[in-house]
View 1: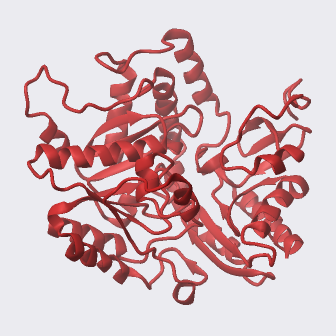
View 2: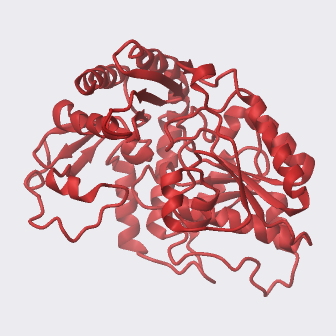
Length: 445
């Protein structure tokens, strides 16, 4: 049951709030309001318990309203509400940075904090450009993204991103950006569990881009190990290793955007570990605090950090940062979240559950209108046939039906249903999610 007083907390006026990534007029005619959460469930404003099959927005990996995280935030708010991050710091920032660096592979030893995945990406791109500049290679200004990639909503992230609707409304964006081809082919990869066999050769397109622009002009390549927001596209086998080899060959920095894949989603602290690749930077956010307090950051290899530390000691090395970088409440939430991941072995749990999760979701492949299913870690993408009236209409109908009729929260992008439940999900709840999604697919077909 929802906490007393919350179930009736429906605002009298919905007009003032401009919702992000939402058709506002349609939403305000039939709002989906969440008023409480605990473990695997939300409470809707009408009192219904709604099973969370999306970890909020890919972020609540430890589940909702976990007591240790809540208490850590409460204690921090009552002790140190804010500390300036420029020229000052709070002790927990150093502790959290050390803990995150210890989870990262190789010599990814330094952490720059910000407040979101979008800020993390823009920070990583700036660090890459600045690194080449101080290394005497200031001509390396070109940034390489990938088609269908999502790297947040900053101008840098949209520029290297490859989702058309996010790019076309914002004009020319950053100059000097190119894109690798995306890695998905339904013809060669349909209904694949884990990494598809086909597609590693697509990394070779980086050689074409180098030949076109010359390596001396290219600063960095940024990719999601698993492209999430575009509809769950797992990397082909050895694709990321090939990218790493080509970047090494030409002195190009490789950035993994792990805002979604970080903190256990693929059965490891970071996808870089799963794939045996050490990138030059990793961006993170979402799962670092299990969605409780906004936080993001960039994990940087030692050589990059050290390059900035060679000038006079009294001079600022990197002219970049945010008012709320390493916010005390976020640091407290992050430390408590990492403790939960460790104590409950949630990364290992996700790895162990992966085969069962994949088998369960693949059980939907014979339903009407299902064009493809992809699974990786505790993530799945289910492609539905588009509605004759337009792309995305069936996906939206599926999301609305799931919430109102099945008491289920799912994420949809276009006509793809994306599942990414909290890592505390039980086998019985996986079965419940898949059963409900099956009914949703039938209802919208």
